[in-house]
Length: 247
Ligand SMILES: Nc1ncnc2c1ncn2[C@@H]1O[C@H](COP(=O)(O)OP(=O)(O)OP(=O)(O)O)[C@@H](O)[C@H]1O
Ligand SMILES: [Mg+2]
Image (cartoon, rainbow, N blue to C red):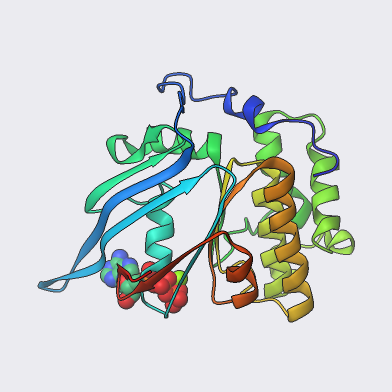
């Protein structure tokens, strides 16, 4: 990524001091064992995920695919430490997320994780540029603005930096969310249907960008997608069917 000068290692050192250091001797950046999620709906239990195992090496790319309602978003949230499973363990960059409380998981996320949500989650009161600048500003980077401008240009939004989310199309908001996720220079990027709202050409640009990040920074990618072009470029695929891993 041009214009950025912090390595993920430097970022990793920047906070989370009270957590055990990520003494991460294993080549896996993410491992999940026996993941299950059961929720109470009305007076019955609904099992959304059941017995999921995942092992992913640093720098790899995993596509999570499956029909609508098969549990992809739920699984992504659990792997990223945003949500806890009902059963099983998740270890991310040496930290066992399932042993940590919300505050500790937030520290690991801040240190390691970028996230592009299915509904973007841009801050409505901030412009596109301010949304993208936020992670670097919070880190205290002096060149947050230049970095954010460069990232917005890379997603094709150089002319839209001062627009607020409500003044942007769905696809443009998605690209702002992707630029923001890149701005935090994560060691692992989770994205929920990153090309879902994009036309073929813009979708291709975003796919190229994700894999450039993967190649330049060794960023691990975990992507939920219905887009076969994207799934085929990933080194691993995980297929969900009604909450179970079928391949
Ligand atoms: N908190 C919850 N309470 C009850 N049911 C839930 C909850 N969260 C998810 N579900 C159900 O779990 C199933 C999986 O949801 P999830 O959002 O993970 O699906 P998905 O594979 O991401 O689907 P899509 O492709 O449509 O985004 C769905 O049937 C959904 O209705
Ligand atoms: Mg989903």
